[in-house]
Image 1 (cartoon, helix red, strand yellow):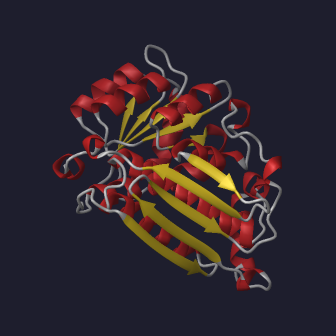
Image 2: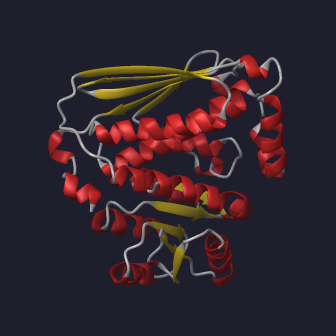
Length: 307
């Protein structure tokens, strides 16, 4: 039974988030009125996930992320952002938060974001570990425009990172989030050529158009090619679609707090923040995501991860 701690000093916003999550089957939701109260709640009942506002008295979201990462490294954190909190949110993502959702789109995005992060976290904890002796590894997939396959591959890549002990538990979760964003970008924006602005105005229309185009030419004939190459120093993920591409130089800077709430900025921010490097090819239909591997001394023991 998943448990979530919702932290927000605004009763209205907190009640909205709690209400959305309590509609999910078997979820248990706790509440805290600020960061200080959240730390007290964490001592009483350790949740599977923390959902926190950024601007709060006593202990703000950035400070709470630091405390949770220090005391409870296996608990993922999702941020709720609003006007004025963008800079803090970028810092929090850089310091270990797993994802974020804008309060403006809470109704449309919260449940999906929580489910994706929580599913990844719980799966990662339960995987058996291999010793950090892998010298090289390469795997490649070619997927049709099938969202279930894309999500399955996202889970596989996240689980492989944990199984092969490429990164710490927290970093495996963050890498999984970044890869999922890259795969969804290749699916929706690359092969199906659907603008993120449609999702901003009509969430249901966005997904209906994706379903329609996945069965129409020329979209239905396009494929997504995904490769993973590992050596002793790094893991390199290459994700390419067969869409028309775009000019990468026109992308907004996702680390600029002013762009945090833009429709096309969320995935880019998570990809760039959670990976060591992110590079698009000149035509914009292939992205190379690199993540440096941890040394053995930095990895959690198996019992710490599974506990």
